[in-house]
Length: 109
Image 1 (tube, rainbow, N blue to C red):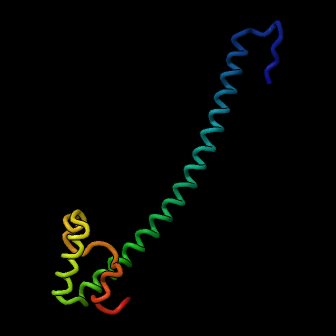
Image 2 (image 1 turned 30 degrees about the vertical axis):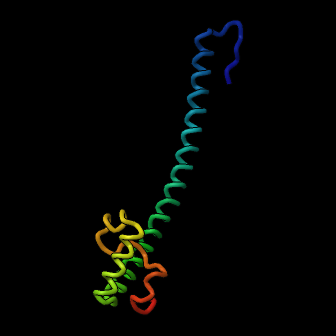
Image 3 (image 1 turned 135 degrees about the vertical axis):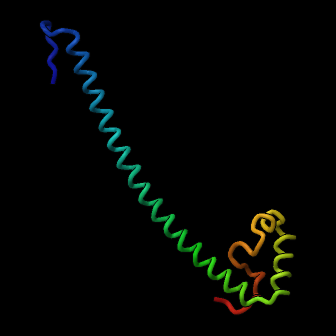
């Protein structure tokens, strides 16, 4: 702690204040870094879960495409393109998870 007396120089009090400010900023920085690290860990876990879910949906989609007849695939692609022209143009195939419209494509998985 700095004692301000009539005999202390004004420069010493400025240095002491600067040191206190620097310590406070370091404390804030360490708390922010801790919070950011925690958030990064949560986001990494969510990404891992989403990658696993995406893989499951891709496998299901491939299975359904393999079980479907060419006529069913053509009918479904036409239905997808008429419902959402941008989706059909972007994927070029049967993208996304199956919906209730895919009941004729084979047994549920």
